Length: 364
Image (tube, rainbow, N blue to C red):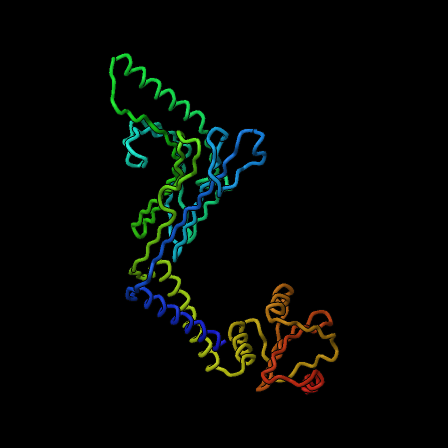
């Protein structure tokens, strides 16, 4: 028992030192990295025809607008962080028709005269993790598969051109060198990642641009496919020392000290536990026990061994019988006689080697 109480006390001191050192520890500098990659893919499907029978069409070819039925675009995102933290995210997918006035061959330099935008999807959420993975095949995650139908947008473009020509005719206006208009279809996927703990907000937008006024077209990637941040952060591993924790520590430590002191005093008072127990019984129940100078002759009784003194005391009290006791430097024996039965409870101060030696010692 002494070893157990010492281990409890040392354990309490070790835990206390750990919490104190962690509470007053200095800041440490660590690298915090954030990397994101936008995954983008597409498939072009043709109308039924006698030239191309299989769908979708190979991606390494240019495409014919007159044969195009619809286009599938897939969007996904992967974000990895150097440590687990809270990540707030939002996602928007938009489909946008842009009509430009042709100035040159470069569509980007031509002024925009008309736009029409449709929001296809908006999602947001929050997770505590060190990795986000939005799979394009997962319908529940931000992103997914979106279907574009060029024909309705081409019809909108034709209506615009016809309306513009009719307006000029109605106003009796003639413009020299009018180069006409061009139309493009954009699909944009925008992910915004916010990390509140480090006050980081990163937005990544990527998509495709499709020419609607060219018979031969391809899907041109717009935006950036990835982002990356790396910086130093100062972390303070401050372990909070709360009142319940202090109370628990004091209680366990006090119990360990009390147990150690009690055990030491007990062993210091009497090195023989059974003798100490016998003397305690004699002192506590002095009014119920008759002490004899000689061993009681029990040969005429049938012996009944009782393992605990409390059972013998219970028997004597319930039947109003005396408890007799004989003790010397080696042993203490308590006996209660009940109708030819001798109920005995013995305490050997020095352990006997065998039962025969014990019975021999009982003979006067």
